[in-house]
Amino acid sequence: MLSNNPLETRAEAVRRFNRFYTRQIGLLHEHLLDSEFSLTEARVLYELAHRPAVTGAELCRQLGLNAGYMSRMISRFEKRGLVAKTRSPEDARAVQLELTGKGRAAFALLNDASRQEVVAMLDALPAAGQQELVDAMGRIQRLLGEPTPGYILRDPQPGDMGWIVHRQAVLYAQEYGWNTEYEALVAEIVARFVRDFDSAWERCWIAEQDGKVVGSVFLVRQDETTAKLRLLYVDPCARGLGIGTRLVDECLRFARRVGYRKMVLWTNSVLTDARRIYDRAGFELVEEEPHHSFGKDLVGQVLAREL
Image 1 (cartoon, rainbow, N blue to C red):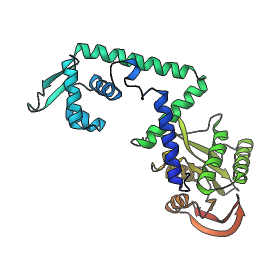
Image 2 (cartoon, one colour):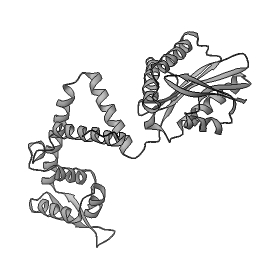
Image 3 (cartoon, one colour):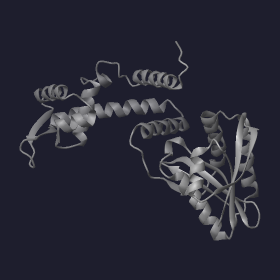
Image 4 (spheres, rainbow, N blue to C red):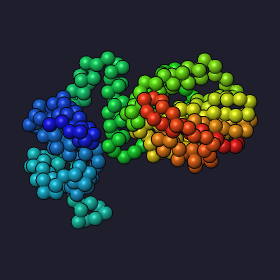
């Protein structure tokens, strides 16, 4: 039975992907990559090959495995001559695990078979598809793992403007249910910026993380003394890193440097995260008005601050 709960619907989509990917890389097979090792055994061999002198307890914490299960696995490895135990020089009570020469040879075969299988999978895709797959996997890793704080701000490059239109249209449809009227508005703003760009008075900043565009903002000239901030955007995968605040700060810094005396912007009351950024940056509400746009009843807000 289909659920009306969005979280349960997304959970089913994740489970469906897991079943697909499990089949794709052969995890349902009794032994991984036609070897004598199970998936868990191969993972332990990987850790031992890349973390010399590790203890069983550390492996249990790293991999989330039961201590008894780990102990039995290591005993099997010992009997087969794959693993040796030594006493830690720092703590005689601690037993360290290391691969023997035989163990390293077994891992090398397993590692090479894994690499070749992935190469074959990627080779079935065009180059653009390969990069798209790698980027998608990287995003999954960032979302489910520890956040990667590093990002850079840069000038726009060819392709960025089309990406901004696409990504903003998708995001606001997903998060607020806005229709294609909003996509048309963003496309108009971006097209006008590119066509009439005046480098002395206007700028666009692109936030990039791990080679992926994760945010952007535009500063355009409204009149001789007033700058207008437009289309502030931060991708959900990069929120919480301070990118939105940094983008607004760059706008303010540039506007002061070139001689603007005031900055304004237009937003909507439902965009509460952006409003908090604007409030912290010193913007104040000067006008608001209900309107029906993008398929929704909204309250438009004009904010401003002196520079």
